[in-house]
Image 1 (cartoon, rainbow, N blue to C red):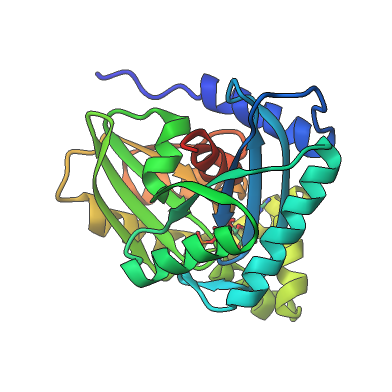
Image 2: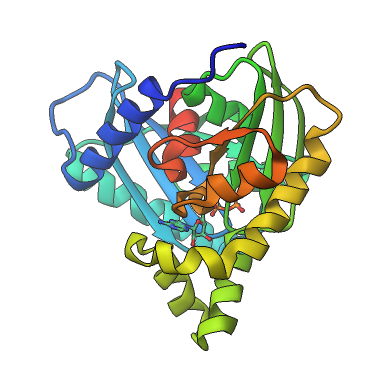
Length: 274
Ligand code: ATP
C-alpha cells in the first residue's frame, strides 16, 4: 500500500502561523511575502519572511466574495488594505509583494478582479495561481484528492504525481452548514455561523450536520469515481468541524484525513508561491 500523506511539514507551518497571528515576529527580514486568500466567508493574509517562515497573519470574516466571484469590489479592497495596514504596523515594515489565488472554475474575468483587489490594496502582485495548487504547496500530496470545503463551495481536486489534473467546484459549503444550524436552533445566520466555529459546540453539532456532511460526501464521490483515489485530504474552514472527516470517510469509503487547522492551508500555500 502506498504511504499515506503525513502532515508534519503542514502542521508545523500552521502551528507557527497560529502563533504569529497572536504574536508577530518583529525581527527584520530583507523581504516579506504575503499570501492573500479572498474567500466567500473569510479574507486571510499570511506573511512569510525571506526564509518562507510565517511572521504574521490576520483574517476577517466578510461577504465580499460569492461562489468564488468578487461581488463587493470596493469592500474587498478596503478589507485587504486594512489587514495590510494592521500587519505593517505590527511588523513595523511596508509589505510590498503579494500572491493571490483563484478558486477552481473561476473565469478569467474574475481572476482579473482578484488581481485588481490585491493591487488596489497597494501590493505588487507577484503570482496568481489556482487554489488547489496553492494548497498542495503546503500538503505536498503526490496522488489522491484534496477537497477544499470552504464557505460557499466545495472544491475537489485530483492529484497525480504531485500535479493537479482535475478540479471541480460545487456550491455547497460552510454557509449551508450554518443555514442548517440556523433552522435547527432558531438562530440568526451570523449567530449560527459563530456557534458552529466554536470547537466546544462541535460534538453537539455533528449529528445535526451529518446529512449536509453526507451531501458533501456524495459530491466528492461523484467526482472521484473516475479516478484511482486511495486517500482524501480535507482543507478549508469547514473541514475544521470535529469528526466531519469520519462522516465523509464512511460515505466515500476512502481513507480521509485532515491537517491540524485546515483553514490556513490555502493562505499559507499562496504565500509560499509569492
Ligand atoms: P470559499 O472557499 O467557498 O470561497 P472561504 O475561502 O471563505 O470560502 P474558508 O475560509 O476556507 O472558506 O472557510 C470558511 C468557512 O469555514 C465558513 O463557513 C466558516 O463558518 C467555516 N469555519 C471556520 N472555522 C470553523 C470552525 N472552527 N469550525 C467549523 N467551521 C468553521
